[in-house]
Amino acid sequence: MKICFVAHFAYGALTGDGQGHIGGVERQTALMARWLADRGHAVSVATWTEGAASDEVINGIRIIKICPADAGLPGLRFVHPRWTALNAALARADADLYYQNCAESATGQVALWAKRHGRRFVYSVASDPECDYTLPMLHSFRERWLYRRGLALADAIIAQTRHQQALLKSGFGLTSTVLPMPSEVTSEESIDTLETARPALPGVLWIGRLMPVKNVALFVDIAERLPRVTFNLVGGIDQDAAYAETMLARARTLTNMRVHGKLDRAQVLEQIRSSHILCCTSHHEGFPNTFLEAWAHGVPVVSTVDPDGLLQNRALGRHGSDADCLAAHLQSLVTDSRVRLQMSERAWDYYYANHYITGSMPKFEALFQAVLVS
Image (tube, rainbow, N blue to C red):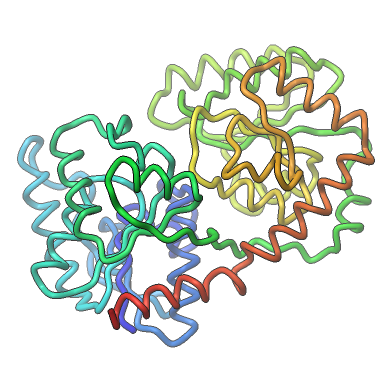
């Protein structure tokens, strides 16, 4: 199978140098590309031009350069060189199937190219708002039109949750397949060893980009309510620097808050390993990679979002909507270590049974192969 991933910002995740923007989509792209390449498939990834100016092969994956992200004149560069260079990159990939993740103009651009050239296109949902027909996260008519066109032309759509699947059906009239999001994070230790190694004093961890949608202000509000609990804030400044600086200034006034800034991958996983609870305060998410990383280390989650009710229904954590509710949940788990340890064991079992790469990626491979023969 010849498959091309279109992920403009994935270069740093593919090379492992940690440079540039590396979020959940980029990490997942690199993970999937490596796994499929190791399985003997011909894998390419189309990215912005970073590193070498020409295409290159890294770890068996062909990285096809589109153009520099800042190339071209404002107002004109959307068409040239960005769209024209993307089309050229798709042609150089010469794949049987093209895969793109996250709602954007590229969804339609890739789908239109694939349709015109008789190739298959698979789209994968990255967050809940992408399934809302009003598309609240896409602000221009051009983006919304191209995204909707891409969905309509897709040979298959992958959803992260049944909730997303239902939204796509009710809003767009489209069917989709729910697949468990893959993760390669694993711990060398057993759950008992991990629990023994955690610090004696309970610690609550928040990881994310410091931007309004992640709602770090709520995390600070919670920390103010629980002065005897240690809170760790991990995240770098994103697009809204003013918001981020305001939140960091607030966080640094709390004696029970430790602000770590942006950490590399190994440091983030070490923070997870040494934490007792992960806290998510986002206004919306899809299926956060941080949940998977936490569960891989037996860390339950207390969150404002609960994908398909997993936190509540499978007791992998707790769900709440405001600072008082989330603080109460955290206090309860900090106080009752027996319940927290039970959640830790369930989180560990759920992750390895459903999301670890050895079980989840064959399902993606099977879907891709089914699309090619349909």
